Image (cartoon, rainbow, N blue to C red; front, side, top):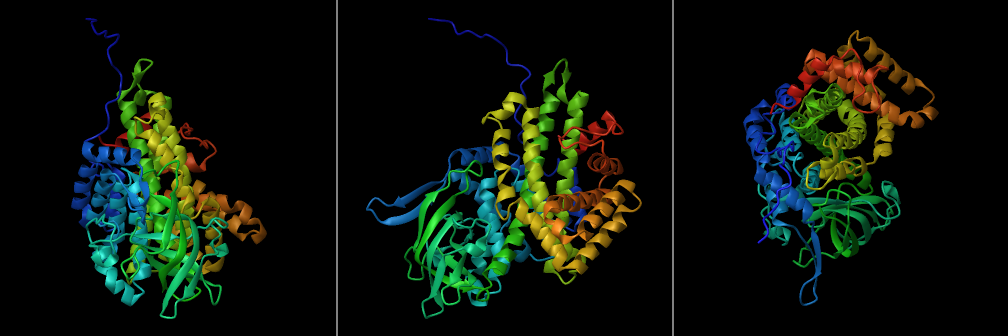
Length: 554
């Protein structure tokens, strides 16, 4: 019998980060919950934060990501069924999301700060597994659109608001809770939905027959989708409610061609479909399909910002945890000045994104109440697309930097950062790519100049006499006052400046003074860099280490 060899002792390896409270360890989020009138939700957030940090839930996330959805086109008798099978872990995550009512909270429990409360909760859940978020977000975004269709909404309202997950693939009438998806993108157009060719023909009874395709059809297992198609009589794009089952109880004529094999977002099903005379009901006014679907996209873009901010939070927490436990060259990584600079820079980015997401939520709270104003509209109309561009872009860079903190262990799939890095690009792409968002910022400023001026005045009152911020604000004014023909080439710079100024103002108003000024010095001075960890000499290492303690109170 050969004696087993033990060639070495395992040392200096970092223990997995688990069984911690995602909310209780996040100073910035807790402060933002209070600042934006959502402190009534704090106990629920504490409960959710504890549950999401448990090893069991983290394992669900990992398992759901590894066991991707499977398409079953036919049953054993050869009948077309187009059934999408998910791992039980994915359904367990969906149960948590529905239990927190992330698909409906502001409408199920309307009160001051409801959107901010929902945003904080979504922020926590998005730190776990993003693949369960897509159908949740689309359902959430569909509610204000569907609510305008009184008869249709009355028949499905309770199922939309329900705090349970119902995974059954059965007709709407038999469901306790439902999910809503979207169908916009076609092969020939991508973001240019006005080139869509799918047609909808009036059946003569107020319903429509849809023929065509969708190149990206999000979450095909959803109980219904909002779909863009051309009215056959006018050739104008309208929006249609297309259920998974027709009223006669048979599967609707929406055939799933295949599921997309994606880089990230693996646990979520994305598909290609063809409509072969599919049953649909028009939603919104005829020929107003794009504005109708854009209303929905406004909410989904908010969730893109929240989701990317949450990914930033995940990366920063994992990086700080690793650096506190890992020793190299005779010292803990966290105590080495250059690593401190990198981690502190990442922590600044994460906190700024958190405050921005929560402030955007406040603007949506205003839109649901009687206290809406041009300033709040400016946040939704101008700052939101800019934030969707900038925060989602920065999340990808941040994920790569956090992976590098882990070294080789960050690059393998047995740790959390490889999945984070694969996931990070998607929020920049769907619901409008970076260029689309930046051009939308320009469009909003040009079409609603009075609204833009209200935001500028809001900003001016908060930057005060801070020289670097006033210079950046003057630069932004100059870009927008220049020949409109120059705006497009500067669109990304304009969107970036809108976000950085917004974040700086929020940090000055809500964050510790040293942290706010550290953000400003590193983002608006020549001493800062385009990569994380290039920090001005004025920011002492001790100050930066204090930011790490604020970022993650483990």
